Length: 123
Image 1 (cartoon, rainbow, N blue to C red):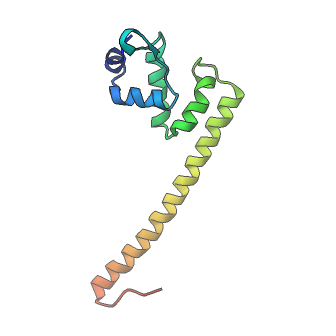
Image 2: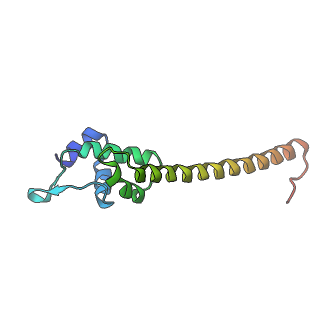
Image 3: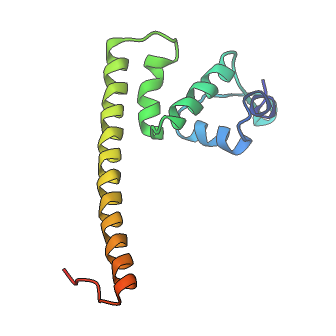
């Protein structure tokens, strides 16, 4: 199938499909005039790539996971890698919650300062 067809079937832009190729996530054969031709299964592969991106994974991580995930088998290695990514995201969430707490404290001080007319503490 050609790139436009794949884009239409997956609701992914042609530009994104070219990016996936550059990142080694998607492979196209070259036909006459160097036109891209995608093999059967490309629709499912693009949908999997999209899902992995939506899960917060990087291109590099997706490239590493695709050989383990593309056939749909949940290997122990795949499950461990996905669990590691979840732990990484949990750490980022914890950091964001902490940062939000600090911002809430600053907002509370500024609100109190505005209400009372006293300056905010400098420490």
